[in-house]
Length: 368
View 1 (cartoon, helix red, strand yellow):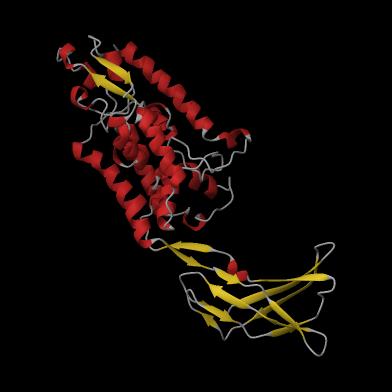
View 2: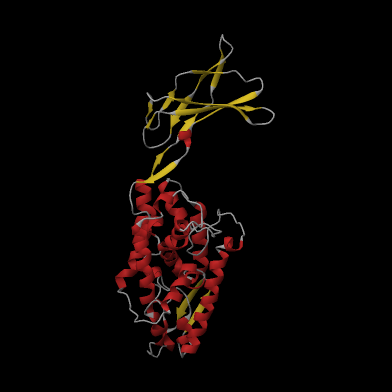
């Protein structure tokens, strides 16, 4: 029996490895647009990642109050066809969990209530909190087109209106006034103007006091920008899923901390002790409990679980063939009562129970 179930474990090992490579083509120097979401759980903050993480896109979309149609559409389309088969065969993080669980040590089960925590993580950390609290923006100063007028001395009197699109007041706006040569596009003049006595409230538009610059409009273009136009994002709370995700810590935070990738928008949070503690906890958890992360904290698994009953590919049991041997339950990597729960939200459709059944009463069904 071990040989029969071991075959599928071997298949999952190779398909998991293949999915890890497919979702991280940057490993081979292949550049792919991250506008496409991966069907498996794979952090797009990883320096080698070639696809976006649907969970990260959903959480970010909720935070900026935008419906992430591509991410949601991808997950629902895959879930409607394959259900949690993706979890069993095409998830890089699931593949890692299977490898770690093979480490010889005492193994443990989980109480049934823990299966609900991944749905709580999906609802609270991916949707509700980001949607309710969003981001805290700073540095979003928009500079409108400057209005230059020639003065009596031959120079230019320039007036500029700025708008603060951030969620925080901006004190002391500054402008960079630049002339670029029409032919070469090179800078021929640069000057910074500061207005320390002025504060711009969130959402407010203010016309800054006029100033004078040399008139170079015959040979150069006038461009006015602000160093405060660089957008920065902060968080109203610590419990943002991407900042707690052990997959993100392992594949993005650690490489960033070790200098393997450029610091991103979240760079100041890569070194959070909380996220490294969560990673350490789950790595140990995965050794002791089969598919520990999938069963307790994976929002993507929760979404696929909700799709599983309607999926075109799912596990079905024929209770008329059952002889109560319970070999299917012993083979199940997620500790299900297979006769009742095969093909349900917690079933990862791995097929171990199919090969374990001596009567052939469990099969993989394709179709409505």
